[in-house]
Length: 230
Image 1 (cartoon, rainbow, N blue to C red):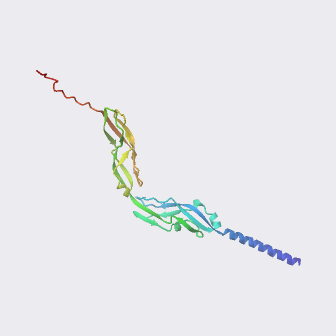
Image 2 (image 1 turned 90 degrees about the horizontal axis):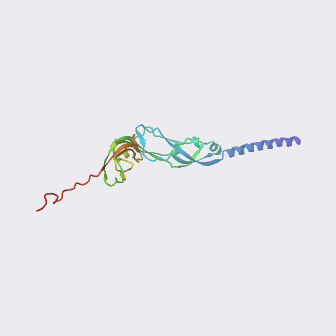
Image 3 (image 1 turned 180 degrees about the vertical axis):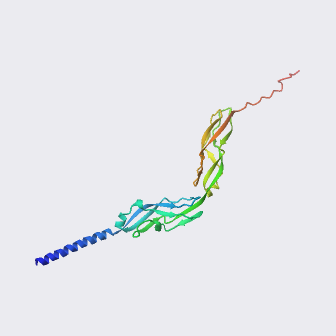
């Protein structure tokens, strides 16, 4: 009798242990869903080409799978890489970004936004354009602005070919001549607000502003100023 009770107790204990192991296994493998903001990386941009449209830096991703795998998934280890190798100028759509996500195969992407990206590549070109001086105000009474001279008079803009075609000039920051009575020179920053173009090297130029006194009008002699009358 005692031996049977002892034997049943051992069986019950083994069953309990097995049930606990199974419970932990099931709990560990319970599927969950977690959201991440995943960096989008553009790799291998061809030489002499550049990105000429807006591409999101982050992609919102929701991933489901076994809890144990999700718990070991670090946001720093997740990214989406888009390979631009051998692409030509133009617009290319990359779809099925979920297939480019570097996660274990046991995990599943349930939502991804955006689900695709458009990448526009353009040739990198250069163009020389004239600099236009911006003047504000007026010299003091009795003085006038004669003109300005620039060094250099042209600068180089570099960037996406499409945007570069529409650039005709670059302007300086405004130079005030309000109440000025003499000529002066100064270094003036250039203004260029291109989206996919920029100044190649020159970001400021020297401007010589020439101011001079207004000549007094020449007085003409009166009719009776000489010779007198009878």
